[in-house]
Amino acid sequence: MKTPSASRAERTGQKILDAAMSSLLAKGLKRTSIEAIAALAGVSHMTVYRRWPHKEDLFSDLLSREADQLFAHVDRELAGTGDPQARLIEGFAAIFWSFYDHPLLAREYAADPATTLRVLTVSSAPVFDRAVDYLAARVAGLMTDAPMGDDEARRVAEVMVRITHSLLLTTLETRPFTTRDEVAAWGREHVGWILFSAE
Image (cartoon, rainbow, N blue to C red):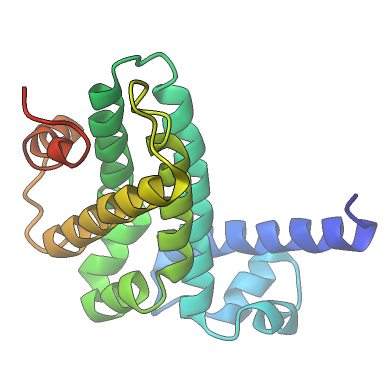
């Protein structure tokens, strides 16, 4: 059971992340200060600094929260999709597109590509690990005829996440996709073979 102080700390953390999202969308990472985020959240700047010593740490945690919300959304969206290959491809497309088309990520990359890429690489471990955990739990259940063991599912999940991450990093500049359907088509051609033999 959570203690009242832990619940209060969680609520405060969420308020700070909400304030950070509002401020980042309005001003961008470079023009957003910890002090401004604290003021918007109604807390002292030291409260923010204790948890997030650098803006990039806060940005990274904000991406982690966005990822968690995205994974929950993808589960709801694909709940009625019975075909395993369709679930894999549509899940890949949904997750990739949500990051690729996210207003915060698009804005930050346009304003400051170097910092954004650093956050997406050096500071991306929490989001990356969440994504691997999420996908491993679902990949294991895709192959109903020959279910995967946990280790195999995790290896496949890591390959999938690395492909998605790499594709994101290499397309933020060139923006080759204009719709999620185009991402799904790319996935059918380049990703499906990881789990499924060609027909």
